[in-house]
Length: 86
Image (cartoon, rainbow, N blue to C red; front, top):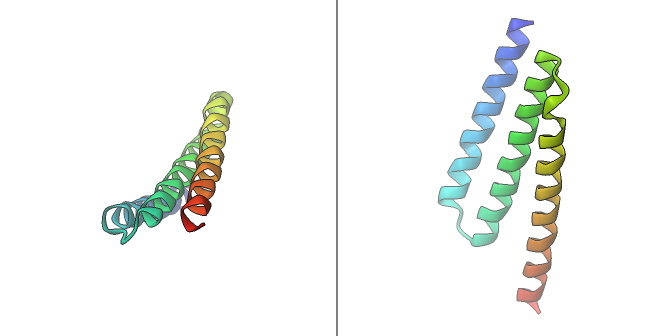
């Protein structure tokens, strides 16, 4: 079990690091916004993995709020990008 926890933590850390690199080096604003959305998804996954490991359900409201925030942000950016192209 310890190996699985270490592997999950390593993969999430690498994914977060690569996403931060994309946020910093992104050639366009849309790339940076998408990378920020991906970073939010990685954060939600990390919180969910921690809640599953510790068998603690108190993080569920935080997961719901972050998921709704990510969805709302993605929809808003999508609408804004569509207006820019017209």
